[in-house]
Amino acid sequence: MRYFLLLFLLVGLLAPRLHAQTFNAAIIGGINLSQIDGDDMAGYDKVGWNAGVKAYAFLQEQLSLSFELLYSEKGSRASLIDRQFVPPTNIFMQYAEIPVLIHYHDRNGMVFGGGFSYNQLFDFQRTVNGVNTSQDDPVPNNSDWAIVGDLTFVIKDHFGINGRMSYSLFPIANDPNSNLQNQQWLNNVISLRLMYIF
Image (cartoon, rainbow, N blue to C red; front, side, top):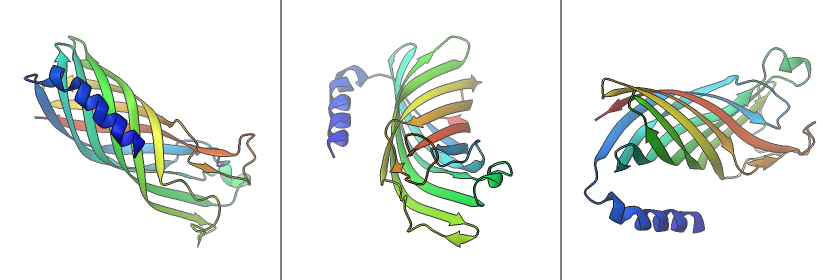
């Protein structure tokens, strides 16, 4: 709850600057390539959807603040190489994601962004050797805070090609069976998306 209060405070402080500024909106759709650092599986082998809406306001001519509301699928999956060391495993997590970013717009159609994202977990499924083990430890936390880096190439004012990386700031779970030293799970995600800008 305190994180939402901080977000509202930030918006309140910026509201005078946003008044009468240019607002834009966009529809976003694409995929996540994800892995969970700490689950003994390597590679961005889990593919899921990333889709939603975005609103942003220009603070200055080349500086904007954006807010997104996304449906985002994350997790991990054992590759053929992983299966030499771990049983066939599939971890699937569905999140409602709320990124807040600051963007710099250069004059060549490139938009560079960075910020943070709050992620609320609403579904978790794990299968090992085809057996549902979702109730077994580790079970991920209901929330995840991530740092976000973002790059968009705008085409003819209305279309954009977007690439994004996000990484958990805090562990989403502790895994006592992990062979890694810290035994913690962290979401590690690359997103590739298309945008239509109104």
